[in-house]
Image (tube, rainbow, N blue to C red; front, side):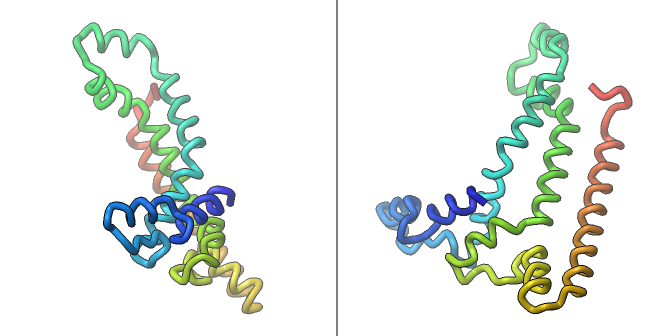
Amino acid sequence: MIAGIMWGFLYLPQTSPATSTADAVGLEGLDLLSPALIYPSLANIAVWGALGFNMIILYTGLRAVPREIDDSARVDGCGEIRLALLIKIPLLAPSLGLTGLFSAIGTLQAYSEPTVLRPLTNSISSTYFPLMNIHRDAFETNQPNLAAAMALLLAAATMTVSVVVLRIMRDRTPAGGI
């Protein structure tokens, strides 16, 4: 919610430093809340909102990589880029899969960011995301049965995505883990 308010202020053409900068370099008329840019703007808010949580998961995954693996790779002449690409990223696959799963669930349940930006732009309607549609049907159009049915469908979709991602992760993870 706070990220939506902050970024909403930064996206408004009247107050946005990005708009001022774009105008200064000759790209006049930049509107980060326009229909063409609303998805990247919402994605930016979501990324910034989840960045700290994902970094904790990835940092913990990196700390779990045994020091001996790093040392032996360096002794074998592995540079930093090869160490990252060939050793650390494959060992971080479970952590990357988990952050990907949480991001997918967060995408299916997006609500606060578009709700906060909605008064600032005409690009976002009351049915823009599934949870916004459910909220509208439950509280504005007085159709609680429809809202409940859509909520169950959203829960089923979230569960399906979770099961698929977890099965893919299970199939790709070595039997012994790290």
